[in-house]
Length: 109
Image (cartoon, rainbow, N blue to C red; front, side, top):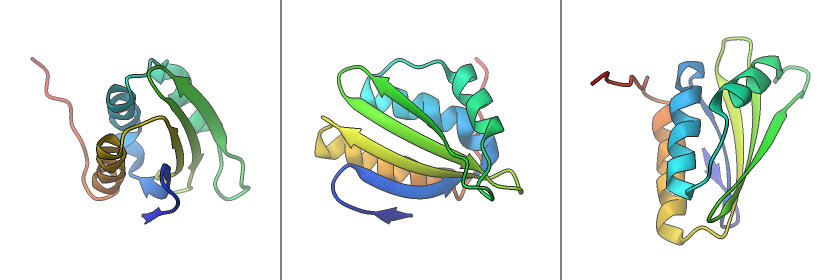
């Protein structure tokens, strides 16, 4: 994962982590989103043809997410954050890093 100017991040996540990644990013940024619509858009994207799916989520802050699905099922991710405090930007960067190294599983209550 590379980090550019404040609020800009690039990396990749394991394909199975897409929904948990988007859900957690939304919680960190206090934004609402339609996770199923995002998943459908990402599924239609294609990293090999540079066909990215983008979504803007707005709440207390603004986040632009861009995704491109690779042939192996992993997902390239570009993130642009606006209006987010530095601590939460770090949390987003850490989440991106975790989602490319570990498979996340939601525990049922």
